[in-house]
Length: 460
Image (cartoon, rainbow, N blue to C red; front, side, top):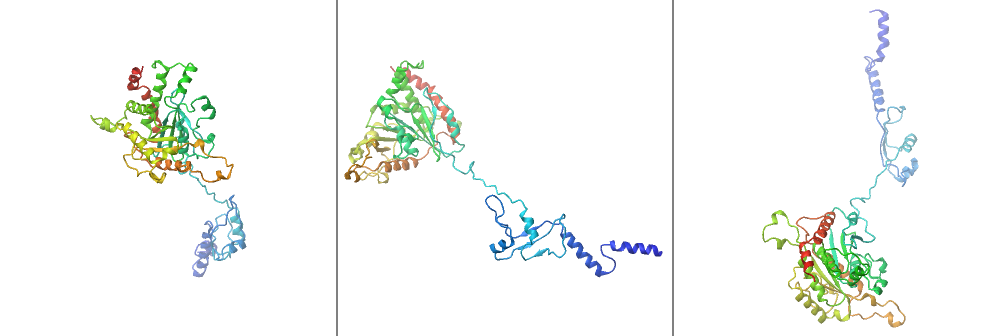
C-alpha cells in the first residue's frame, strides 16, 4: 500500500462510529451519539400543570408562583424535539425548578379544552309544560298536538277526571298537577270556571285537555258530562249535529258517554268529582259508560273462550266530594256516604275500593279505621268561602273549621293518588308515545262502536 493510500484511509477513519481501535475515543463518541438520540424525543413534564382560569388561559407561569403554590420541587424531564437545537450542558433529567425556556415554551402551548356535557338529552328531567294541550277539540275530533310533549319511556301514570258542570273538576286536577290553593286561578294549569262563565252559566272546558308533569304523570281534563251549557250552545249556535243523532239531547249524551268510555280505557285512575251528595243520574251514567266501554285488545294466545272477561281492563275510580261543609266530615255522615256508594255500585267491575280514604294519615280524627271494603272517597271543603281579610282581632285567631286545612287535604290526596297501583292497560307494556297512539285508536273505536250505535238507536 502506498503512502497516499495510507493517508486517504487515515482521513476516512474518523468517520467510523467507533473512532478507531482506541477504546477511549469510542466511549466518548458513543456518549455523544446517545445525547443526540435523546434530543429527538418530545418534552414530557412530570409535574402538575399550571392552573387555568375560566377562559382556558394560564393564571401564572412564573417559576416563583410555581414554587410558592407547591413547596415540593417538581420533577421535570426535558427531552427536546428534533427541530430544537441541543444546548450542551443542559441536563436531560433534573430535580430543580423549570428553566425560563421551559416556562416560555409552556406558555405558548394551547390549553386542552374540557367539554362538559349537562346531559340535557338523556339524564336531566325533561322540561315541564306551561299549560295543557288539547287532544280532543270542541267538535270531538282527535288532535295530534300532544305527541310532541311525550317521551319514549314506559314509566308514566294517567289520571283523568269526570264530573258535572261547575263541580270543580279543573280545580281538583290542577291542585293534583302541582298548583297550590293560594295560587291565583289564572295560574292554574287547567283554567277553572271564571266569574263571567258562572254568571252566564257556561262551561269552561271543551273537549279533552292533556298536561304532562315532570314526573311523567299525564292528566286529562274533560268537558262536563251531560252539560246543559253544551246543549244550549248547540241550540243557540244552530250547529249541525251529526246525522246519526236524532236530537241535540241525544248528541250531548252520546258525546259524554264517548268521553267516559274513553277514559275508562286509557286511564289508570279516574276521579269522579261532584259538589253535592249524590246525583243518582251520575251513578247511572257511570254504569252505562262501563257497559258500553270497548273491550281491551287481547294477545293472540289469550283469545281462547272464557278469557275475554278476565283480560278486560277496568280503571281505579276515586270519588271526590267537593265543596263539603263541616257536617260532611262528621263520623256519621262519612259512614253513610260510604254505605250509599257501596250499595249503588255493588255490581260494578270498576276498581272502587281499598285505595283512598279520609281515615289514612289521620286527616280527620274520629273516623273509623280504613278497610279494604270501603269505597275510595275523599272530601274537599268549599274553597270559595275561605277567610282572607283580617279586620278585627277576632279574625287573627285560628278559625274552627272541623276539618284540616285545604293545603293539608291537597297534600293528602296527592300522596294517596300517586301511591295507587299502576295496572297494565294492554297485554303489552306501552311507552308514552305508544300510549298516545293507543288512545287515538281507542277514541276512534269508541265513536264507531256498534254498542254505542245501538244504544243511540234505543234513545227516545
